[in-house]
Image 1: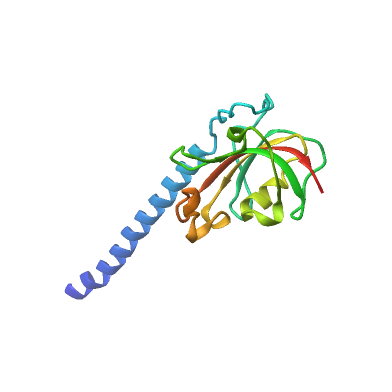
Image 2: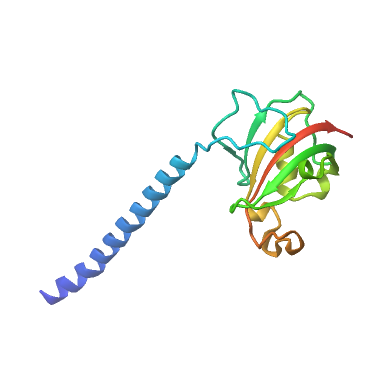
Length: 169
């Protein structure tokens, strides 16, 4: 009798552990489904309008980048080596804005080859004249190093609204 009990006890623990894992997976999946629809962002002063049909859900790429096109642009889209003229605002999860060309009152020209990976990937999803919202996970942003001079902590998720004014080259 004692041996039979000892044999069943590990099986029972394994079964209970399996049920616990399954319930965690189900709760995570339910949470992810609830998070799919996100309110549209408040646009910064000076930003153009977003499309009335702008999606309330993000598209997630294979890399883990989340994006949604808030205003369709033309068919001219940048490539990873493009220089682009943009207006943007970037903030952290706590809502703190860490950079904004809108606040400076003028657009910025930069090379997509010289920005964080999430920007390079995301900006290829919007056409000239369009607007995109990006949610960049830490590993596609500043990673473990963060950017202390900009107040960006290690592995921070970065949020941006970017208007693509022009593809310069």
